[in-house]
Length: 170
Image (cartoon, rainbow, N blue to C red):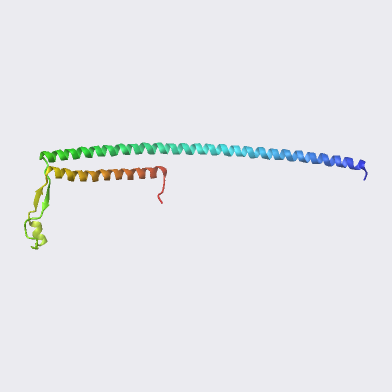
């Protein structure tokens, strides 16, 4: 083959290579554009889902916060009411309106063995408590009641959060 024969063949091959390269470039550009569109759509969808999820969680958080504040107010009201009742009780004890007593063992010999029926028929002796002792016992009972109310409020708050966020304890 002569040079004149190779030139048109080389020109055709070169044109074919250029056309193939150009076509491949167009397909590559089209593929890249399609991937970019898909990524943008996915990013937009993800951003929308994230915004919805965030709004849902913020709504739950506000509702839980409001419920916890209401529970705290209720606890304060309960404790204020209990303190008022304790103060009224102590005032009644100090004034003598209310008298407190405790059962005491009678002067019988401890070695005497009474039957249970005889012991229950006997009149039990009582000793009256002075106002200071009654107030001290009431303060101890009041502290225990306050602690119970606070623990119940903690349990209520825990259950509220668990129910609000649908959390399962492990």
